[in-house]
Image (cartoon, rainbow, N blue to C red; front, side, top):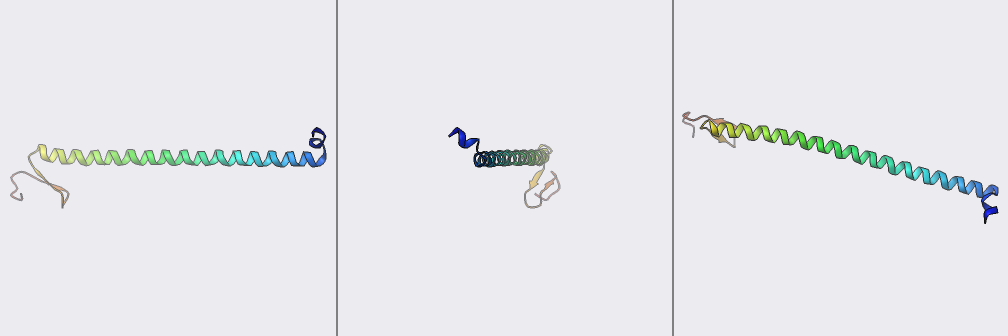
Length: 85
């Protein structure tokens, strides 16, 4: 068995197995890197969407605090006393 590993054929088979294992390891590594980049990009988009939703919520709450009504259809505040209620 040991003599086979030191034969020319054994050396080539060992080299081929080493290259295949290295290729698989590198492939898995870069797939994980791509996965992590995608996760971070999605998290950044989630953060931006949350900020936008918070801004819209604050706008509606300010409208109600000022005594107005929020028009869901038009997406605007109808001020109190405008007669459009």
